[in-house]
Each structure stands twice: as C-alpha cells, then as structure tokens.
Image 1: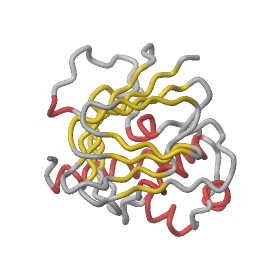
Image 2: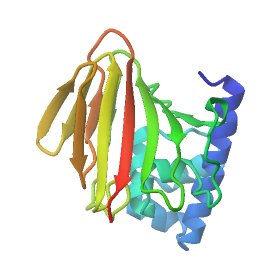
Image 3: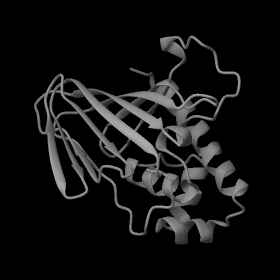
Amino acid sequence: MPSPDADTTADLALAARLEALRRERDLSLDAAAALTRLSRATISRIERGETSPTANALGRLCNAYGLTMSRLLAAVETNAPRLLRSDEAACWRDPGSGFLRTLIAPPTEGYATELALGELPAGAEIRYTLDQPQRGGCAPAGREQFFYLFEGELSLDIEAETYRLGPGDCLRHQGVDAKRIANPGSIPARYLIINTTTV
C-alpha cells in the first residue's frame, strides 16, 4: 500500500497531467466543464491539486479527452522498460470509495494490452455516470476489457446486466464500460483488470 507521501505525489502528477491534456486539446475550463458536466471550479481545483478526483470524475474526464482510465493515469512511454519493478508501479486511490488502482503494465507505445490491479474495500461501490454519448474515451470501439477476481466478491453493471463474480471468475466485454462496480462482500475485493486494444 502506498504511503501518504506517495499518494500526494501521485495526486499532484495526475493534476498536472489533467491540465496538460486539457490544454493539448485547446479546451478552456468552461469547454471542459461543458463536455464533462463537472463544474468549472471542480476541474480547476483538480488541476491545481487541491482535491483528488473521484473515479466518477476521472471517468467523465477520460471520456471527454478520448483516453482510457489507464492512459489518463500514466503517460505513454515510448521507451518503457521491459521489466517494471513492483515499487515503480503507479498507484491511484479514489477518495470517494477507497478503490486502489495499481498500473502493473501501463499503456505503452507498441503494445496493445495494459494491466492494472484493483482493490475495492468491503461494501464500497463506484458509479460511473456518463450523461452524453461516449466519445471513444473510456471505452473506445475495438477495446476489450477483462476482470479476473483473485479474492472477495465483485458485482458489475454492464449495459442492462448485473454480473456477480467470485474468486477465479473472469468477466470480459467489449466497447462499453461498467456503469457500477461494487464489493458486496465482507473483505476487500482484489482483481486484475486487462485492457486490450484490438484495432
């Protein structure tokens, strides 16, 4: 588990990345607010590192900026090392749910697959609310996503279906993101997230 200092460093790095992404797309704060339906003040506070974005806010931002969550959390490395040590993996914690996401194989140029570890506390849930059609950001066409549960319980709402996973279960889907991810159990849910871009 990352230290509080590591969490602060990750939050500041994420804030700088979000601001850079918005500016790269030549979006004002008002334009970004209109795309995400987050308030201008919220986006500004996130970019200044004054508040840590929730998973819902990050979902809205990655949709607006045309990125997967992993690509939002980690810069694409053109010369990424073949071996990534455990203490080098980037982590992010959702302040709302306590969800911890660790990028164990971050998005890298030349590779179609990225891996992340998820840990969701007992009783916690994440809701992703996208009020507009997706622009190919969090769930671009041609992307496959897999959830493999190591321990605990997991419940995922994808389109009109709810899926319950136990240890050893694997759920895969294409082109859309889960609208809700919840841990209905009494222990943390630990799982592997695999994203593969097929086109």
